Length: 185
Image (cartoon, rainbow, N blue to C red):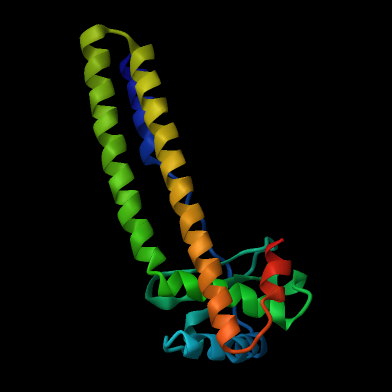
């Protein structure tokens, strides 16, 4: 029983670290700054080239980090059909910055982490009292499932908000939202 509990505890607190491979490419960074500058200006967010990062990764992705750092995968740059699609992606990421989504996600994750830990402690207590490890496992798995559902619902809401912001930012600049639509499809 103790071994099962420790195994579950270890799996809950361990995570896989994702190491980013950042590419330094002056020409591409300059181009991205040129594409992003009008979007950030419209959003009233200061931009500096040292906050634009190219990630060596073939997947279609871009994301923002703390302090308004923006990361775009090489796969996104290579698979985009035109500049308008990149504008759409960058406007979407700017929407995450404007919405304060990074901080809000951290707060949401802390809340879920606390609930999961409380559930784990309760499950361990129940297992110790009843002698039934299977009951503890069921409680932990149920809590994990609820946490995953909560974070997924939260992220869907944030993605929709970022899309709406991107549409507004592009529209205010008289830029087509077709690139955003096409790339997201």
